[in-house]
Every structure is written in C-alpha cells, then in structure tokens.
Length: 382
Ligand code: SF4
Ligand code: ZN
Image 1 (tube, rainbow, N blue to C red):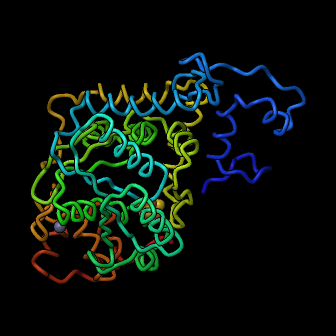
Image 2: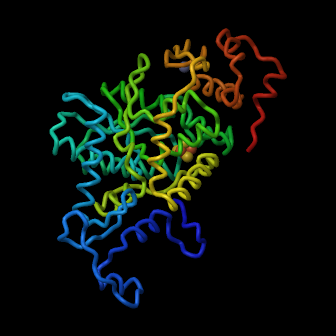
Image 3: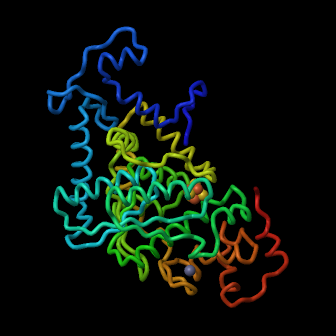
C-alpha cells in the first residue's frame, strides 16, 4: 500500500487519486468535505442528463458513473476487437492476483463476454508465491472473486513447482534481487497452470501505465530485445508449454482502473508486497506519474513511441531455443528459471543474477565449480 507522498496525511496514493478525480460532488458532499461554498453541479458531458461524478484522467471529460462505466468497458472491447485477441470457442485463463488490475480484468472480461457474445470460456489462474502476510491474504480475495464471478480457479504454487517459497528465497538471497527470482518463476508458473487447465490463451492485467513504464525501463537499460517485445498486445506461443498471452487493458490508465474498481465497489486487495524494493521500476513509475501530472497523454505517447521504434538491421538479437533441462523457451543452454533454481539448491544464489552463461555447460555436465567461482556466486548484498 503506497502512502501519499505529502507525509502529512495517512491516505494511500489510490485514495488521493479517487478524492482528486471524483471532484464533482453533490452540494451536501462538498459541504461535508469541508468546502465552505458548494459549487454548481457539473453535468455529464456524454449524456448531458446526470450529474458528473468524476473527471476522466485519460480524456479530461466530466462523466456520470454510468457513462464512465460504458466508456471504460467499450474501450476495452474495442481494444480486444481491433487486435483480434480472441476467437469464439477459446478457453481463456485470466491471471488473477486479487489486485485491482486483475480484479477489474476478470470483471470486465466476464461482462464483455456476455454483452458481446465472445463465446469464450473463462477461468482464473493464480500463482501462490508463498509470501506470508501478502499473497495468502490476496488469494483469499481471489477465492471470493471466484465465487462472485462464478469462474473456475486454479492456484499453482512456487513451493509445489520449485520446492521454494518466496519467504525461503528471500532468506537466502536477501531483498535486493528477490523480484528477479519471483518474476522469472511467475512467468513459468502461469504457463504451467495454463497447461494444466488446457487454456488456449492467458490474459493479464497489464495496464497502459505498466506498458509505458516498461518501455522507459527498457530504453534506460538499452534492452533492445525486450523493448521490441514489451509493447506487443499479444504474444504467440513461442514453444511447447508456452501459452500465448494478451493484455486487454493495455490502453487503460491505472487511475481509471482504480476509479472503475472504486465506483463498481469491486472486491480487491490493495496492499503492496512486503518484499517490493524494486527500486528501478519505482523510479520509472514516479517519473511517469510526474510526466502524467503535467501532460496526461504522456502515457499513451510513450506507448506509441515504443510501438513505432524499429531496430536497425544487423543489430544482434538473442536466438530463441529451448532449455536443455526443462524444455522451456530459452536463448541459452539453460533457461533462467533452471539457472536460478540451481543457484538456490546449491546455495549459490548469484548464479542466475548477472551474466554467468559460461558456467551453464559446467552445470549441465555436473562438473564441480572451482572455489573462486563458488566464492563469487555465494556473496549476496543484503
Ligand atoms: Fe514477487 Fe517482487 Fe512482486 Fe513481491 S514485489 S510479488 S517479491 S515480484
Ligand atoms: Zn529450464
């Protein structure tokens, strides 16, 4: 849960957004909120009948609740149709964490599937990373969502798949690189859950802010290969056990997702992970929010730039193959997940962090590492 940066109040950042954007309160609400003189009510700019209750962060339009819901939902529908994300008869797994994005995604996907007769069979897939005091609570929200939306749910856990929980991983690797382990394991865990459920596609709750942040981070890191992929609204299957993914909320602003969940009174979990240092993404997020406050279209502009960047001929790109241990896609002899796991199991947590590709052959052929190599891979900055 991110607290308001003003330090004086104890509101969360999301509560502040809701307060700021639901600015068209009724006269009694304005007076109750401490405003000495009530302003004239603003009419919805779409229906011109009802009182506007919010100003859309994406367009600046003042809308009533019903018109906002319709605009938000139909924009997601247009995204789905324009990108041909689904085909009738497909089984789609919704990656559900209990957070606002995936809860709104599950709600909107169910609603649009019925409203526009997509003919999809929807399911929820959750990953239990094994984070006490965070994921166990958010999974309770997912279980309630399952009842509310009447969708089947599959939970896959790190402990069951890898023999490690994030609690145990953090004990070994500390709080600096924990998200590297978690991110790599989650990607594969979702695929494993999707294969178990035999779904045709996975859809994730990545929103416009997430995509813009990732474009910025990939530019800052010079990661050309990821930069090219990160704006794609859908990915095809890259091999056995890799299920195609898509992002129906790719053009939905985070602030609008918060407002939608708030006005719809959706049941979601808003506490931040207890192991979330991820400083680099945090800086990119703060930078993006600053840009958005000056120019709301910055988010869409960055996505647009990312979509239209092209890579010069002759730039070397990683060649996708398969992991010789588990068969998952990999551009190296061993996939990242297998290397991280090997490092954990050998008590050499740095093995998967940084570039130690030349050691992969040694690991594969079970050759012993030298003392110097072991020393280098053991030390972790906590
Ligand atoms: Fe995993 Fe890091 Fe996200 Fe926590 S913040 S769930 S450790 S990736
Ligand atoms: Zn592997």
